Length: 400
Image (cartoon, rainbow, N blue to C red):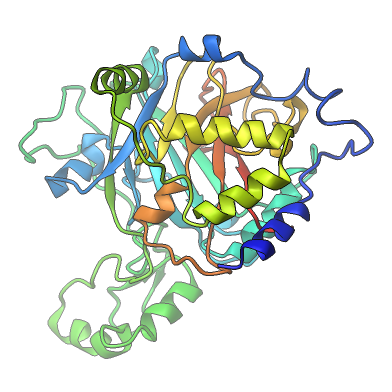
């Protein structure tokens, strides 16, 4: 790893709001999202998520309301899915890839079932372009490579029983879902292979990818399906991220266990940050707000180094920011597109997830410092089943 190169890239990182003439460390402090004292932060409930290989594959089916990462989503509303441009990267127009979903019900009948879904383009080039867009305040159309959708249902609904699901895998939903793409298993399969009449695709690009995918290509299987009348393979893509169940634990409980055990832990903060890189960063950040922010982030995450997710439904909860200068101000967080209300922090996705996804440590590989999800404070209903929320992304050393 070229440490000097990484530090030079870091120095060129220009993450500033449009009010560049304002001093970030002074005039923006009052309006920066995330200001809270350490003592206050320790009192706010925070749930942290850990990836685990599921003991029972059936537990990740949609009727069990899972929190999961990788593979394809377990849609809450299985019929009225996001479609059109909502399912595409706004830069390369490729279908977005499923990152993770979090089951996050609230204490209200209309949000008895509630899940947040996160999708992103796996291209680092698109994520870098995304950085320019997220700093634009109130554009008519904001282009993104990371998209978040919120879906919620009352306890009595047309898709699931109002009774708690059985814990033996025998539970079934009340209705079937939409026919999905046989390549990605994510988006609606509105296009059908003209030969076998059985294989579905969400886009021409996924049809082409399946046709040319090697030994298990649809080119080789299409005629067999046409003759046999059997169903096509579901989610045949070999580029989906590996599937994990996300289990949640209360951070306060884990902190107490660590205190009792008195055991030091090692950090998995990011795959790119070796000891030498970290020392170089600290030299560059000597005495700066970025140094303090990074040190605080690393210390807090190192208590549970395998965590990939932080969640809180508290209005007072704030994310942990790796880089001080890359934090949004309140005006950078757009209003809810559905009701016009304010959005608040709810979920933070950590870079450790890339480690579990086996993302390569190459210069052009996908990487981030954190992804912070803001959702409608009212968790409004009405309108479409899947309401788009807002993601704020901080990068590590990449220059934009």
